[in-house]
Image (cartoon, rainbow, N blue to C red; front, side):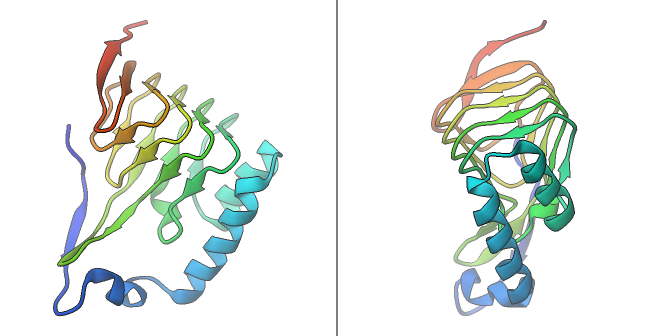
Length: 163
């Protein structure tokens, strides 16, 4: 139930100083522009098209990204969201972590019919199962079971919905 990330050690400077050895500067610039435009775009079809075609994210049908949602700027292609899912206002979905002695990459898989509350943070390497509910302002630091209702800073199970 933890996170599935790949770890890459670095030497001397902290890993952010090695950032452009791991990802293209121009890719980050392009992704940044696309993400900033999509954050304020009220048109769900346009936003999903931008995510699918410009960021190479896997986004299911009828999925809704609310205003101010921020997918990972460096590795958005590592994010997959199922169908009929709602990602709430100002949620951030990360697929990377830059730490002092290493950086980590991990796929984020969000199932179908999932509801992510506003202002949540989803860390790299997390899977959120079909039908799960993540309450607002939740730090998702581990996998969420299908049908579960989780919430809090360091999310914990609030209820398991077996329907």
